Length: 84
Image 1 (cartoon, rainbow, N blue to C red):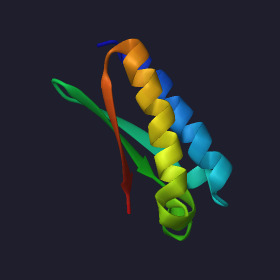
Image 2: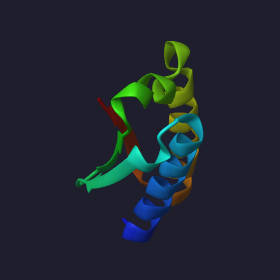
Image 3: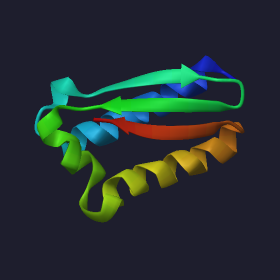
Image 4: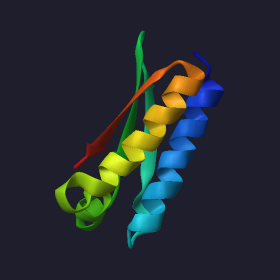
């Protein structure tokens, strides 16, 4: 598993989330690499968490689907967790 691929995934998620929120500077994505999975922990301002998730989770689901497609390309399983 390449840390370059992990950073590319984290940068994509960070940029996508920044487009959704009001406080862009509060957005951060932390990469936690395990043996079989890579967890991308997304942190946003408390007032923006709902915007990241979206109604019925539609925004979070869309970001997860794109990262899932990327996962197949790089043969790594990414999990996105939105930290509240």
